[in-house]
Image 1 (cartoon, rainbow, N blue to C red):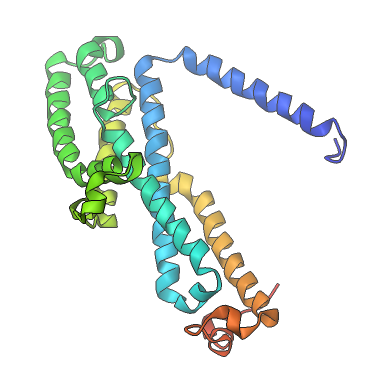
Image 2: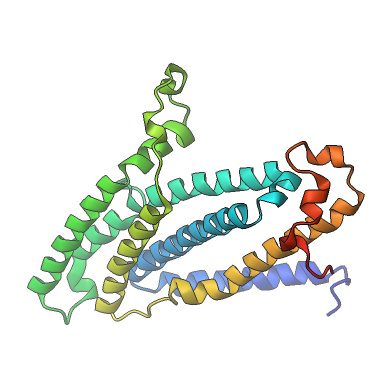
Length: 258
């Protein structure tokens, strides 16, 4: 069907809605533990994706700082939003809210209803592993105290301490800390996928292969477009720190234009 056909998009919408409804019906018949694991693993994937995006933008800053003067506000604000989103995602995964799907909820299900999901597994073995994972969870929960504090005081609402110059909750958190946190959570989830004999979703690296290429290509195209646009941009727009000649002559931007 031609995409210019006026009925194309309405038919396409109905087709997608039908597929989504079919997927929801299929999921509703799966064991509760499998649905919880899938939801958490999906959250985990997007959290790692956010980390990847922050790293790529940081790499851009380090390798091609000259281009920052062309769209600095947009690029820096994008990084800022990714960072805030990362705090929210990590807090969602590890919070103890009883009404939310989180890692604590997952471990409580396994501990209280393990016979429903692991009938062939040894009871003592399962309970021993759950107890160990709960201890790991508590350690991880303590590790994210800085993240939760920043989420509560800076993102969820503006804390009064901000106008009192109490900036302790702005403590710097390294990306390596987020990386370590996510890897430990993934190990816990995969363990219960295996116990339940459920299909384990593709690893982050496999799922990321396509999306990362898209993001990298997107940044590459963006840089090229910026350099092309400079041909007709008055130097004063670039600003004192980023002279037009310096940017245009930067060897990183001397690439084939498309």
